[in-house]
Length: 291
Image 1 (cartoon, rainbow, N blue to C red):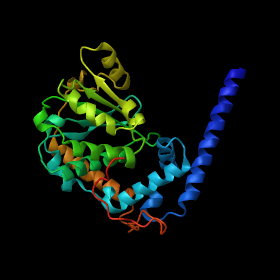
Image 2 (cartoon, rainbow, N blue to C red):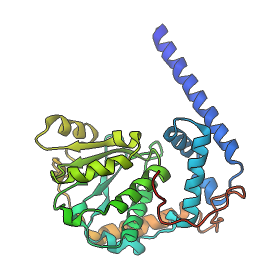
Image 3 (cartoon, rainbow, N blue to C red):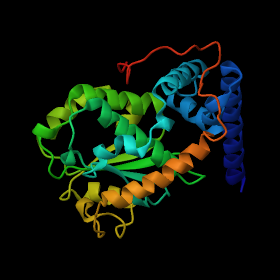
Image 4 (tube, rainbow, N blue to C red):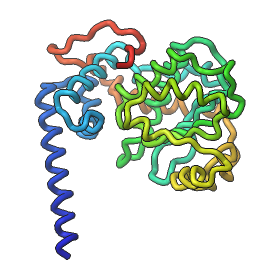
């Protein structure tokens, strides 16, 4: 009985300490308006604090960098019709099922690459990350990725710069949004590419990347601990049939675009600004170099 009470008190103290850090970060940022006030919820503050080990100064800098990026790149304004061509083969799309924790699932199939513009490919991925977040349950902050390497080869591999830019955006502007990424049955040649890419990952992100091989029972069991085998597509060792219907998915995305506009208050003509006067926006490229 005493132990249970002690654990309860410890959890309460931890929650109170986290809320204190959230309040410190709020005060450090100062007043927010427009979309910045919508973006910077308590859950958002916690994600940035978690990403920087609850260091308020480092979290503040990280969040300010994101607000600058969002003010110039405007990811919430991307609409499906702008990136629909990228999605024609279903190389990245939101699955129609969740993992066992209720998380949104993105399916990535790099072997289905159909375009050559790196900027448009990243824009497409950013759109789908935003869409995955839009469709998270209220009590969930994270998504899961399933990456299928069927048809992948070195000829349709992502260029290193594009991979680095993608990692930078995910780690620095969507911290703690990725719960886990399963790389299913990558070919041997992928190992050389991975040896370089993994150096772009911070330790927390690196720990979330899991390799799954059909003949490796432990890796298969780990993935199945996250997913119901009846929902998991056959391409990932499950029982479900994976079918991507571009027209149907486009209809879903058009509906979600309306939902996103409502979320961000486009109808109410909220300020486009994410930043306060003390953090003036600066011109930025699509993705700053990863540090």
